[in-house]
Length: 152
Ligand code: FES
Image (tube, rainbow, N blue to C red; front, side, top):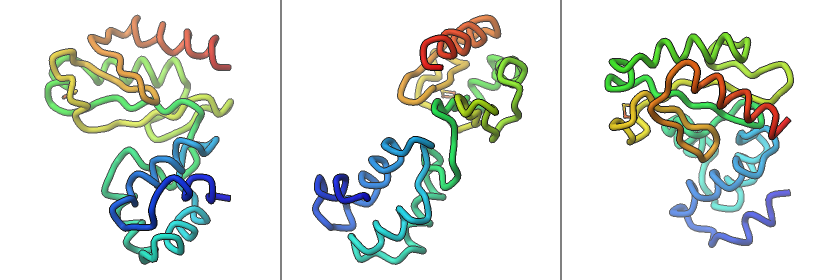
């Protein structure tokens, strides 16, 4: 099942994070399953525990199924000072979920994360691979509603 992905990478430990990324990006639920971990372990000859260590160290990975669009709102100090908690409340209200949860239609998962490297544009969130900076509550709501219409 993961052979197409494995074909792109030599079976060396150095490729572990790239393979995990590829698996997660190609999973309809945006996560790395137990089955995937087992397959990667066999392909790279790396213990399962080591793979879980990597998966839990990097916050961009998930071992739980997530929505089609993963929202990651930065909560590090520069974004906090610029009001990311207000953005969080607006996102929760718009989506009807708490952080760490997925909407019932499976379209969005809301997560908090550390600095996304765009502090000059705080507050910042990322949805899948796209960054959204200088957020206001209205802007955040509009972004979500636009994605809802486009990707539903
Ligand atoms: S602190 Fe939020 S992007 Fe850096």
